[in-house]
Length: 371
Image (tube, rainbow, N blue to C red):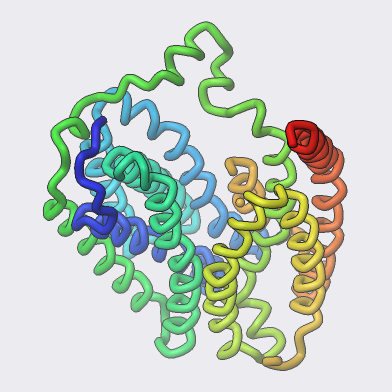
């Protein structure tokens, strides 16, 4: 698709970023609040409450895996509209959460809808950006999701703290769902986005296994590391509200995610330059070590002082960890996640780190020989 306009911040780019931002807010707002809703309304176990939180992410994974097929048959524009309509319907259904089973079904379906929306918006963004500014544009677009990972949990914990019951949360989410559907019709889509997309990836995988059509095998090693990182962070997302209540830091807990996002935004330009200049190891090892230290500090708090397998870790982690809460408690659960992160460091070394170091060494030697 040829691009003659070099402008990046077009109305379409901004609107799609807003759609992604608002949908992701609902995503993370409910992740940190729905477990408490399940416990208070249906008196379920902590494990089942964790499932109520994480099944949304499993649905999102399903939606992402299926989005490519919809885009190939319907086009990006229709796929996005389909996802937004489903997102609106499933958001309203929360008012009819009469049983835990219904809640789990709604969570799964809404996750699928968000998966469709996220994939469709990302695809459209890549198609409408000027070719020579595509990397820059995608980087800015990704910030919409990063900001939502902080704003969503903050709003969710704020609403739980200042309003009785969960109706205020469902009303807030419904308003956001209405907004994203309405602003869709203000986007002026290029005609090509209404056409089915014949991806080259589909052609090259016609004679391979079904799994290879959805998963890039070469990305599997680093994705396994992401699985463990996602598992460790999943407990923070799902059980933050319980933990902060247990240690009497409910008000401070809501600011955790704002600080989290602020640090990501501030460090992203630095880490991007480091990645280009020094490779992945110089970033990954220190970050995982800091993550482990941070998780330990988090588990000891007494005052106010990254792929598909990552999604699987986030998705199944709360259910598995919820099984352990009755016997271990929230503080011990978070402390045990330090061990999980240490395992991820070891896995990173054997699955990717050694290869990264070797390739960097070869590249440096070749560069020196040329000089």
